[in-house]
Amino acid sequence: MLENFVKAIIVGLGASIPLGPVGIMCIQKTISKGRNAGFALGLGASFADTFYAMLALFSLAFVSDFINKPEHRAWIMLIGGLIICGIGINIALTNPVKQIRRPKQSKNSSRHIQDVLQGFAVTISNPGSLVLLLGLFAFVGINTGESYQKFTLSVLLAGVFIGTATWWFTLSTVINIFRNRFRLRQLLYMNRISGIVIAALGLISMAEGLFQILLVK
Image 1 (cartoon, rainbow, N blue to C red):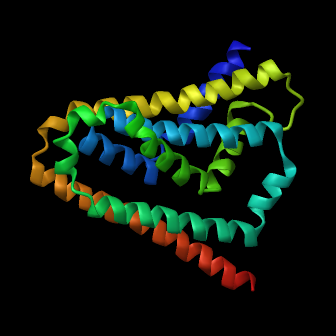
Image 2: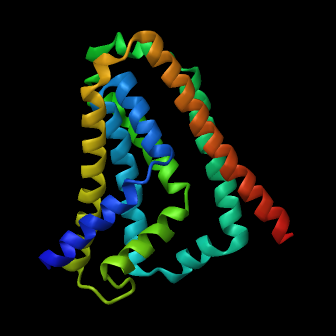
């Protein structure tokens, strides 16, 4: 049981470490609003990854088939890319200086709900997360689709969540250490650059999804 728990933590870490849109957003949020905001965004991604891990472990064939069908996958990439692009544009147009000047408000946990929802939306809109998790489970030797007991499934899902959350806490904490070294003008430029990069990743996903839709037709 302990071995599977450790393996699940490794899966969670492996699913989170690649620097994609959520990683860039976590860095941007931490620098602009502090560690709690960056970690909240990461937690949203952790919830989405854990949900995909549940689908993988339960081996819900109809869900996997739906996501992996070219026409469905293409539409998910198109819509997901649109969401990511919209978030990127919003970040690029947001003034981080105003956020930094409201430190007491950023400490209110209720104000981080939007960060959690953003992290969840970006991760859940990427069907590649499920494919990555399936590959990681196979890599560490956890068989998806096997008849696990409820307790075992809970332990595996908890391991995945802890693994992903550990990475986001570590990343947001490390970035937060260097946060005060950034000047206001540098923060503004970083906000613009990170927003443009995230929007560009969304456009790439939209273009790939649109290309696949036209190809299928």
